[in-house]
Image (tube, rainbow, N blue to C red):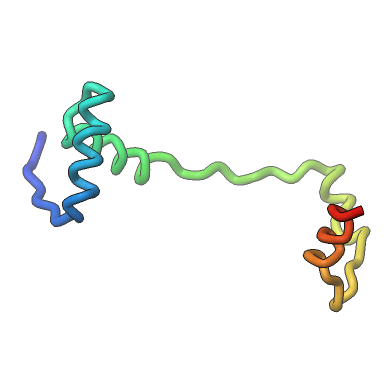
Length: 78
């Protein structure tokens, strides 16, 4: 059952959304409904860590004063 919903949105966002919907041959209402449905229905799957990756956890230690940006810059300039 459809029900009316009133939204207050930025005018530029509305205009761009209307153009997007028109190009995709879909109503703006259906576009918003589809987006909201995707937010509430698509639950992220839990990432499974393989035994190999689990065994590598903690193998490498990094000093507290490690400068990754500086080292990366040095790597790029060599």
